[in-house]
Length: 355
Image (cartoon, rainbow, N blue to C red):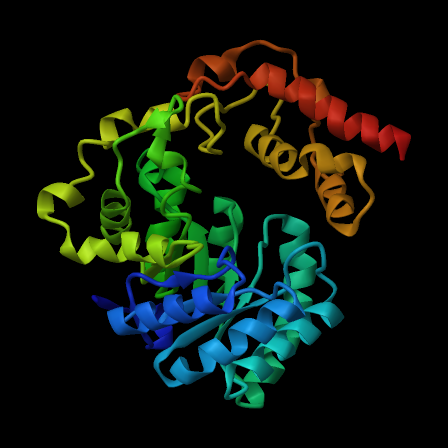
């Protein structure tokens, strides 16, 4: 295992970490995964609150390895972001890990400006109390959005950033900018989704030929501290750990880079190459909000209220698009921006009118 500093925390973490969100909820599976990880030198473990039954199983498996691990415990998640819920679930995880301590707390999925401006700032007060009590080391945050990632890193408020990075990042300038900002600010960078949710392994319904070793080698070429493949079982963990046995030829990701555009064809990467818009529509922001809302806009919950509020705060709405097509000519990924603006106007503005 290769170890790198987790930014200014000073902690040494193995470059291959362990993501547990999708871990099969069986005691035998959990046991062999933790044992295999520990034997391989994996020490960074990303922990979300799933449900009490999960922790009844996972807590006893985790505790024997506690003194060797760097635990990143998530604050918030799922549909619940009120701080009372966050505090209860965070405290529950701490009570299960064996020493009532987390090396890092991760503010989870901060993907809107409102969540950064309100929920994060309120949550920071609670997390600082945990630090004062000696129950927490560093404060971190996870996000999928480059603008919010940059805001967090440059704010000085977070020590660790969890952010999606994979082979497609090679052609997405904002993601590379996030990497550079973390290096400049000495923020520990944790790469999530190194396989892009497994989509890098399939192209047009057939195996793409891209391997876990290539994906990991690319991520390790960036200024990351560690990466956390979301594994389900020990077979998937061993596939990641095979990296250390792979030849230089097997790790060579350069052959995949010229063709990486095909994984992004028709998908907005929020790179802003489509700008300037003659109406000053923030195209990337509209795209991002539409992506996160999805069909869930038809449902009534706090998360959707937040997304609707973020859209309502935009100075220029999608319905003002004049369909000039300039953005589509500039887009390097063939996104039908005009159609997306129509869809956004229908989803957000019709919902707003109904409300």
